[in-house]
Length: 94
Image 1 (cartoon, one colour):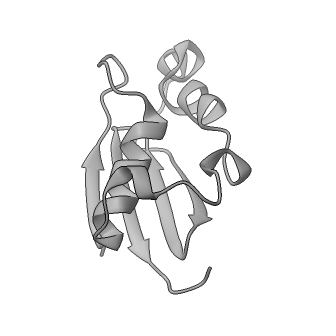
Image 2: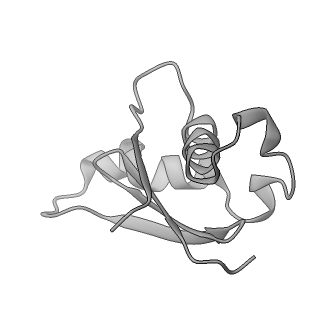
């Protein structure tokens, strides 16, 4: 079960990085500007995630179900799913 979940709209104005940072801030009980270090880009290439899960190639694939990508960041396991849901689970590992 996720501590925090947020929804990313790949056709919306907010980018995936912002969605992830806001979700992590919510999980930590801090304001998003406080999530500065370590930089998210040191842990995941969000542009590559967007392309893999939401880009033209992903939409062309005939698949059933939901694809997901997971990575660790600031003591959380972050899951980004192809249906736009972002889940943040606190692991305690930094």
